[in-house]
Length: 170
Picture (spheres, rainbow, N blue to C red):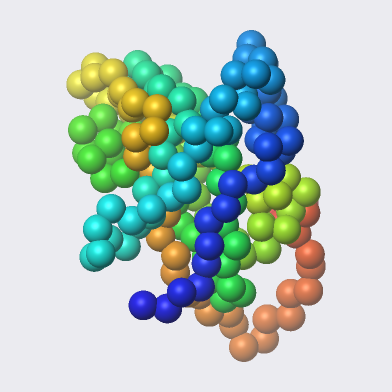
């Protein structure tokens, strides 16, 4: 296997800022406790393609409810690679847990963005069976897979990213 990337935590200051922006009812002390508990994504087995992202908080979503999750994680990867994020398959199968953008696309240049490349996930419980989606803090909820990509022969992009969530189309 080719080693092309590394997961890191975003800085404590960036995480606390993003956590309080996402959960304004929270406070800095609780945001710092969450930051201290963040685990870097890991593969569950030697043959796993996906790196499990762990929930930084307990999640309980009724059908139709959604939640934006600041993961506290960023990914430094070589140019020519992308990190694609998907729901953990068991959660998708049991609860129809969905990522609201269907697939998270984390480009290599997102790492150097103003928000330090902080990876967020917005999830929805799309259960058609009335099931409540429950994920314990510290349990896997999303998986990321690194893939190489190509570009067209006439590609001449030279723009520089600064942001995420549609920033390259502005």
